[in-house]
Length: 112
Image (tube, rainbow, N blue to C red):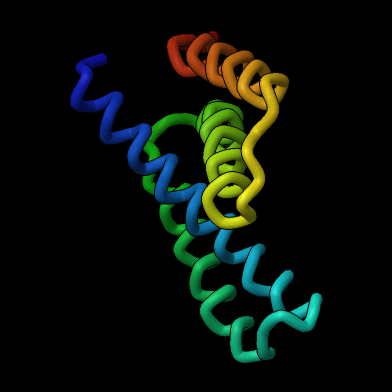
C-alpha cells in the first residue's frame, strides 16, 4: 500500500471520527443545559455524514470498523484535550498506542 493511500485512508478515518464525535457532543450540550435543542439538527447532520464517510471504504466492513475504532480512540483523546481542556494521562497515550498498533495489524491483514 502506498503512503499516499495510507494518508488518504487515515484522513478519511479522522474526518469520520470528528463527524461522530460532533454528532454525539452536540446532543450532550443540549442534555446538560449548555445549549439549545437546535443543536440536535447539526448533530443529526453530523451523524449522517459520519455514516456516509464510513461507507466510502472499499474493504470488508468488519475490518474497516475495527481499524476505524483505533483512529476514533486517538481522535477522542485529542478531542478531550482540545475541546474539553483535559490533558490526556500517560496511560491514555499508552492505550492509544496499543490500539493503533492493533489497528495496523488488522489493516495489513488480508483475511481468509
